[in-house]
Image 1: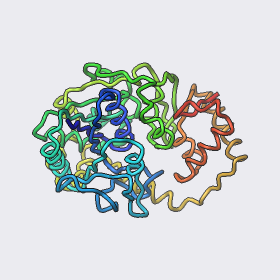
Image 2 (image 1 turned 90 degrees about the vertical axis):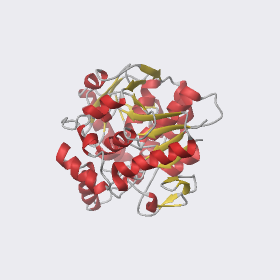
Image 3 (image 1 turned 45 degrees about the vertical axis):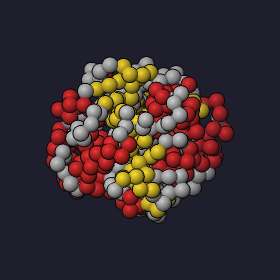
Image 4 (image 1 turned 120 degrees about the horizontal axis):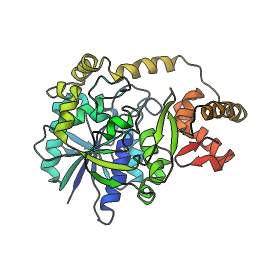
Length: 362
């Protein structure tokens, strides 16, 4: 009685997949297999792009093309990954998407999983809705992973349900645009639904899934995210999960259609540059090179709290009510390894402003 959930963009989508599985099937003894990328942003993994099986030790074979990430797996340094810790804290099996062989390779992985598990359901889950982008939207920043999983799911010989959770929360497409593309309501997350992943939300860097959980807990307002301080509305749409027709999504997504027959990640990148005008892995390469040349900044509590006061004053003037610790670490020029130290410092100094997993501007 296995269920299969494909985390469309990896990262926080895998956490949202675990939350959805618990919300819909919490009374059942079994848990979904979650197929996800090992693609963490540079805060966690200093190497640009997604990791393949050769970037880990301790993986376990599931099928000839699919490996699972158990709790004792480890990324090979200098690579980093949140997946082993997810596997340690959640009861699900996390299987690794290997994008090195393009859409054809991911399709093969899916077909092997379907043959191995004979799942009762297959869901493709995207937090935010950028999987519905055409490819030319000016706000679109990271279409590649979603387009790859969409292209693969459309070719597997099994029914796949496309779900969008937290419409607009990833900041890739405006909420009003995403809202108009959604189908029927599948679920509305509640505060209770976030409990199975509450420990993960304390440390996982995903901003979109963090805001998804926050809206499920009743948080409303404007949240600033990323290094650029993108404002994201936290609305009643935030905790919803909607179904979208898979073929309609493919018809909209020009990049997904272009990469249907790709056999390498290099091909996918080249077509992303052609269709979208860029590859997000190029962005990561450029940012990684820039970060390498930046001097280390010491986390001095007095300095940080003084800078935070100024940042909050500026954010308040823009109508911002919340922010993420990832955003704060970025604007304070702290490294990814200092994010948790920053979070502990702020929560211990001003616990009343911690609206888990966000920081409230007062």
